[in-house]
Image 1 (cartoon, helix red, strand yellow):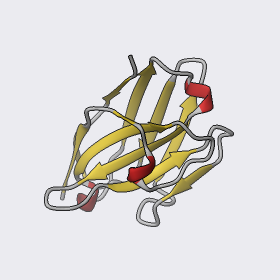
Image 2 (cartoon, rainbow, N blue to C red):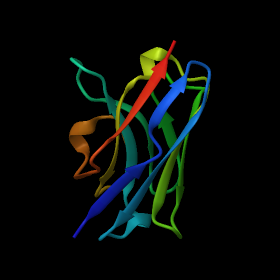
Image 3 (cartoon, rainbow, N blue to C red):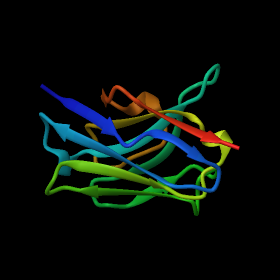
Image 4 (cartoon, rainbow, N blue to C red):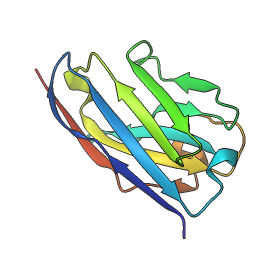
Length: 123
């Protein structure tokens, strides 16, 4: 059974940092594209960052220079380091995996999803 379990969300002041983790099981993590997405109230789910199986990465313009995605294939875990957080980063954050080599920021491409973790940035 495929499982993705996020952790690390919480409440932080603007300018602060959080690190999200996503533990994966039930599939060959090394071979999958992975991504982080977020959904704010009343808005559509949007791509934040993604990593292809070869480790190449992409970021939404809104988070470039502030967020860093990484993957530890030995631990079947992906991370999202979020620095210089802004109130507009407030959302439920989801990790996802796609049975493809290359990763994209389109949530429609992803096959497996975590349950989400809330990130709230206060001003």
